[in-house]
Image (cartoon, rainbow, N blue to C red; front, side):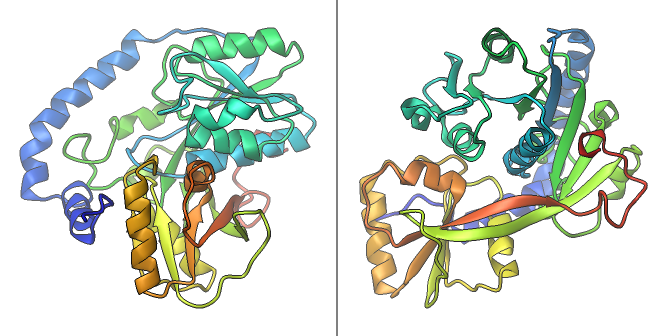
Length: 350
């Protein structure tokens, strides 16, 4: 039976042509240039947008794939909450039931039972942000209006994955990069991983660099404050929520945008693993035959624990299986604000 997760060969092929300048990427460059012009014109056309009475904070990225937007959104929301601010979060609800409907999936008191149908990242936000309303829906203007109507004292609305959403006026834009992926080969889609030209960084207030490594000069040249942070493992817990220290032979399971980031986080915690079962981003794991095949392979390999991400567990917890799952809970930690770099000014941390 063939398992449809990303093979090492496929992963290397993607990395070769999107993260390095190859013959294929150069051949695709003319299409990227045309696409870049369209994106630049689009930003000029959508120069206005809906103005909310609340402060709108956008957390987005300029590259395709995972950069750590949602963990940084959680970090921002919790920080504002700890400062006594009234905050809510809007997420598109990608591949969820409410992507076209716009629906509150949690309020200040509870996460609603139907939140699990809102998509993995939206559900994760709702489950992690106790006391903070979370709404799912692609139409961000509609989501903001629903929040404004339901919470008259609301001060801040954070839009997760919204840098390219131009129908809303933003008060602050954070653009997140991951040290592992960086800017790829520097080309815009389809020749590279950039969702739009790097020149769009002129419109951001802050750049967030997630991970350890050198910040590319092509990012630095825009002279934006660069916030350095990284994932840290908060705890590892079993399917019942009990903290656990996994021992023996370990393997990883993920369906995220940048699987190497998960690997690096696990390695940083001093853990080693035999293999990494990598699926495409937002994979729903509904195919029970694939889950059975994975379980059989793990038993043959005498794997004791299968480590997965919180994002993936947001789906797997509602699916029947016998995988030896444990969940790696991470948190984003900011390292160069109120620390070594006193030149960075961050009003939300004042």
